Length: 220
Image: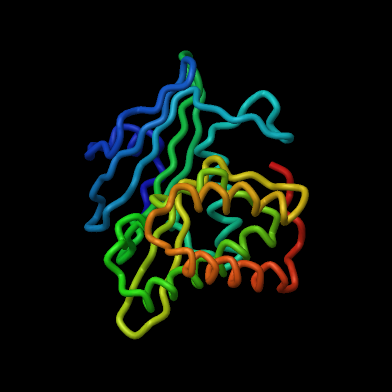
């Protein structure tokens, strides 16, 4: 059973996967921790906020990421499975925790440079479809680097795509606005797709964008 105690996740030992990201008087950091035989990622934050229409005074970015994990799951886009999310106010400030399961069998896009051309084109098509579905819902990832695109390649199966690090995701007024920055950002950052592969991605993206859209994403 999942432990619902904030202090448990705030103090759980593990291996830090990156140094704390400091912003003003706050910070955010992530560790990888074993828990009942399944690796978990634990994001801990202190006074680490974003501002949105509904939260003009500040909202923990871990809370925004938790919101969009649910939203993308509703859209049929693979994301890490949330295990725990909590926020507490202390005398020093606001602490937040987000715990997610490890994506089993996935690797980040940037490590797939050795794929053969046919498989690489399949990955481009699958990624274009997923991003089209995201942008069709007027959602912008806003940090779409190759390390935030996770790919699962099972023999004889189409590639599966998952998106991670959703703490900068935001709604946009139009699909085009949602797509523009993400596609430009990914194009500049990725190193595995040839120009032909990128065109495959764009074609799949355009097809997914033309599909009947779900309701407008609520402002957050």
